[in-house]
Image (cartoon, rainbow, N blue to C red):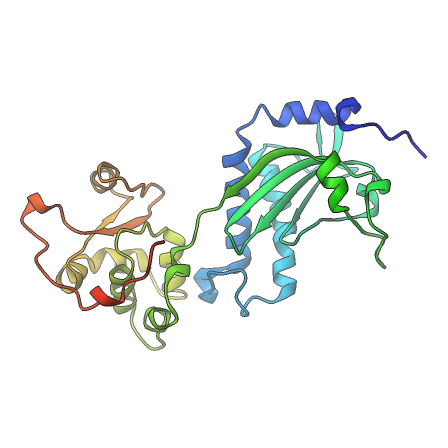
Length: 290
C-alpha cells in the first residue's frame, strides 16, 4: 500500500504538469491525434476518411491509441523509456489514448502518472488530462488486469491539460451519399473525380490527404489536380488554388482561406478579374458547409 495524495499535493504529478504546460499542448496534441487517425484510416490506399465508418473495424479503431503514443512522444520530443512509456524530469509517465469514454490502464500503469488523451471522432475533437491513476479511483480489473478510470474520479482528480479542442475536419464528410457515389465512382478517372469534388465543395479548404483519398492507389494525383484547373473553371465557374504555390496561397489568405500545407480551395473568381461567368451543373447539388 502507498499513501494517496490529492493532485495538488503530489509533487511528481505537479512537476510533470508544470513541464507539460511549458509546451503549446493544443496544437502539438492536435497534430499527433490527427496523424494517428489518418495513419489508421490509410485513405491513400483504402478510400476511407471516417473512423466511424462501418468499413473500419473495431480492432482498427482501438489501434488509434497505440499509434497515438508514438506521435505524442515525437510531438513532445520525448524518448520511449521504461519502466512505463516515457520519463519527464526523470519521472515515469504512461501515455494512454482512447476513442471511447474512458481509458484502460494496464497493471504497470496503475497508481502511476498518466497522460490521458480522449478522441471524439464523431465530433472531430479531443481533450487531455494528467492523472495519477490510483487503483482506488479505478474500476474492477478485466481478464487482462486492466482497469478503467471511474468517471467521478476523473472529474475530481484528473488535471485538465487541454479542453475539448477541434481536430481538422475531413471535408469528404460534408458530401452526401449521392455526391460520394460520384466522387468515388468505380472505373472513373481521377480528373472526373476531382472535378466533381471541387464542384461540390466550393469555398471549402481541402487538405492534401483528402485528394489522396479520392485518388487512392492512382499515380500522381497532385499533378492530376493541377491539370483540371481549367476544367473546374469551365464546368463550375470556380478558380482552384493550391497552397504549394506562394502566389495562390497568398491569394487564398487574402480572401480568408488558409491553404498552407499544400491544401486546396475552389473559389468564385474575384469579380474584378473579369472571369467566372460560367455556370455550374453542380450548383444545386453542392455540399452544405454548415
